[in-house]
Length: 385
Image (cartoon, rainbow, N blue to C red):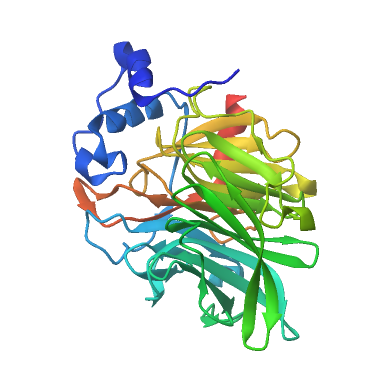
């Protein structure tokens, strides 16, 4: 049986062999930032993670002050004609959505509101046109946005038929967001800080997409990170203090406004092994050949990333951390995204992670995103087995 360790409990377990956290970090500037004990525990836990990789590149900093909690969640768009022109869209909780090229340079910025999570779904059809769809949660209007991605430039065009607000009496502050597909049905899924989830069917209308509520569910505590495995028909939801929930993506008429069928908390609850430390944040899927691959979660409780098998019961595989290299290492990741498509500099796939402590030497700068060659993770995982 797995059990959940409190921060205090983990601290006691590690007390005899706990390394000191970096002197350069001020506990007041982190999400562990509100709790110096949590920060010390996170660094101690990170020290126990054996596999270490480095980031190859980093993006320009978010439009924010150095102490702001700003960058959060990335989405990767593959250019259909030229992979070298692929883009990364990164949310900025201070007021917009930034767009970066593969060198990490900001090439566009959309001041659309306090964007929290962002996702992309390819091959969506509306009005006889097929395109890649970008969606994001927006805390300014307690809503979510939907955009068509221009296949040549990556520019965004609004394709929502109206402002897609959520019921704030049900969802307390929009937070996590993802897109998914089951057959011909396309879904937008959103959750709030109170752990309440709503799933919407995208419905073509005269002026774009409207939505129809098809599922609601209340999780025991705060949720955020989500990802769908469209081929497998699953929706994964991270409950930050507990673990990762798995439920069928496709809904039935009996679920409308009711409980999902066969919802289950995966066996790999946070707490054991030592690498699975609350809180669970971003979730992403690495799409391997023949339906293989990995479910990847950022674990803010120890500044690490956990890999699980994509199939079956999603067995825990291993964990890794991102340390100083060509660019600074990564702590306290919120959102992350992975693609397996070969890209220039990333022949076996690109992993993009949000960096909660972005340093230039010893100088703290606004948050940003780091680019990691996922092949490094795969190689290190094989060596550690």
